[in-house]
Amino acid sequence: MAAVVETEGLTKFYGHRRGLEDLDLEIRPGEVFGYLGPNGAGKTTTIRLLLDVIRPTRGRMSVLGMDPRDSRVRARIGYLPGELALEGREKAGDYLDFLARARGGVPPEVVRDLVERLDADLSVPMGKLSKGNKQKLGLIQAFMHEPDFLILDEPTSGLDPLVQQEFLAMVREVRTSGRTVLMSSHVLAEVEHVSDRVGIVRAGRLVAVEDVAALREKAVRRVEFHFDAPVPREAFEGLPGVRELRVEGASLRCTIDGRPDALIKAAARFTVVHMVSAEPDLEEIFLTYYSDEEGRHADAGVKEPA
Ligand SMILES: Nc1ncnc2c1ncn2[C@@H]1O[C@H](COP(=O)(O)OP(=O)(O)OP(=O)(O)O)[C@@H](O)[C@H]1O
Image 1 (cartoon, rainbow, N blue to C red):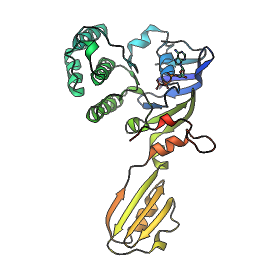
Image 2: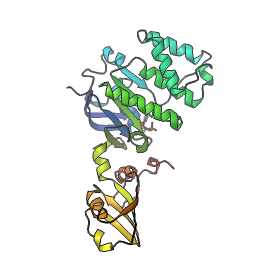
Image 3: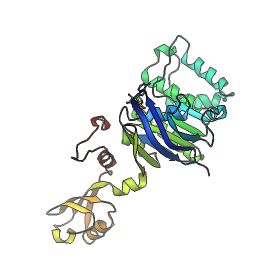
Image 4: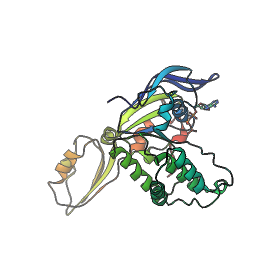
């Protein structure tokens, strides 16, 4: 099947300032693509180009197999902007009804269902919406007409953890139905559980595209085993991927790089009473893409405080 997004040498300069340069990107049908980078990396520029809000300095692109200037493209896209300009005294709920009609008559129960799922309070005038409710309204209008392609710019900002979970469930449902999602974020943790692939953009350039499953396999995990009796250190030395090995009496701690298979088989020769394996730290891998030759993190803004 044809790509949902295909760009070739896509470039945008704002005067002399680089917004995006030579982007070659392919987003496949039915995938959730996480588009990651720190502030100012070029994520919003990419999104605005795909939506024909701004025009490229050079390069070419197609969206849903068409030129983004083709007016038929927009109707098949659901878009959540990074910054929603929602002002005025009109009730937020009324504005949503207006959008539902403008999208060719979205059934009221579909809108109601989304309002309930995201626990949105739209009873107030738009100018008085809280940041979280503004974001929810933005999501509802992006999802409600069941578009073929969802473009979500920083979708989880301002959502509390429970609502974030519901949002991620909605994204998974979109994928299950064979539709496609592009979501930007500056935090890997926000997109890694739902993305099939992530693209990492920095200073206007795409520096990597990675399969999330492959990233996870490469990731470093911290592992602990507790046995019913002391174990010999030699039994665990030299195992593939095992580093920082510490054996103290009946406890073993180490990091494991890649598959834990050999370590688990070695441990299984003794009686394991307890085992702890931390989630792989993908953020660590992600940050290596942002390090310069000296290993410093070039963009401190990438990592959010925990
Ligand atoms: N309208 C504009 N005029 C001039 N420069 C711009 C304009 N829009 C973006 N830029 C510049 O282009 C670069 C990329 O910005 P962009 O907004 O695409 O980044 P981003 O990754 O979306 O960041 P953020 O997370 O802050 O939105 C930045 O250096 C930014 O200052």
